[in-house]
Image (cartoon, rainbow, N blue to C red; front, side):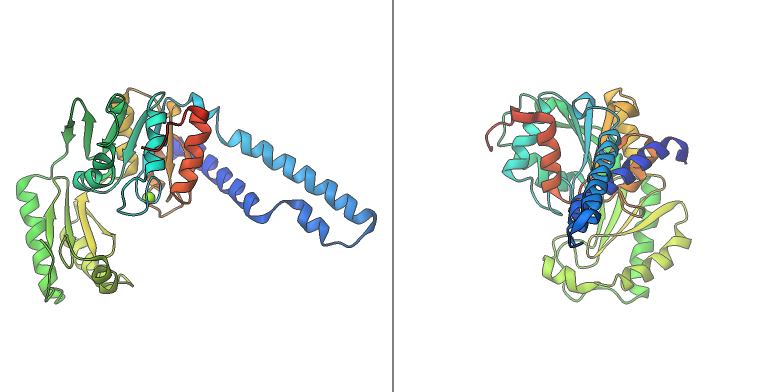
Length: 321
Ligand SMILES: [Mg+2]
């Protein structure tokens, strides 16, 4: 769906990847240096410079206009603003505070509001609240929105109807038993109702990371679950997430859905928005964002994101908070 609108952003993303490749291979001059002496090497040097020049032109055209012209920047959370399930660090907080002076900022992730609270809201509680009204939070891929009006308030929340929730929970329970996956030791509830999403965590929601990591490293257990769940729950999306989770969500709730909700909330069109994510590649959970026609900027990690924000806010960065 919406493939037409996504093509431009998709091209943009691939041009962006091309630029990253250029950084990693160190320019055409090195290749020319491998040839010993004489005119040939000079010609190679010249060719190298021409190639670099051409790529730098691609570079500039890869963002449709200066970064400062985008009215809103939308960030993925895990791997983009912070390492997975971690808090924003002090430098990122400072950069976001600076960015919030001039831009609307939205953060979208598959995580629950509780996860947003740990990773974003609590760290931001140390910061003056003056411009938090420019920050919008979209947990569970935009099935919920939270905005700041003296405190964080839920603006809307899509809910799976109660009878459907019951059916999903009973089905999950039956599949756990059928595959003999009930844990001997568990940390918190195995099944969590997140409103728009039912999440199964094999060892419980609070299981320590080292226990989680060894439970299903090859995803075989969860793939077997998905195989059984898919035909029983055809109206829902069953996705493997994290180290031990299986998420059951309403169909069609992904980053594309979330970005359309962000456009609606901010009353902006796709051309006003730049999306920043670490999983824009096909199959990545940011990839659906490209369907919306927004410009997309691929990062590898939060450090890349910091560099991007710096290029927007320039010297306006406040001290670490
Ligand atoms: Mg991510």
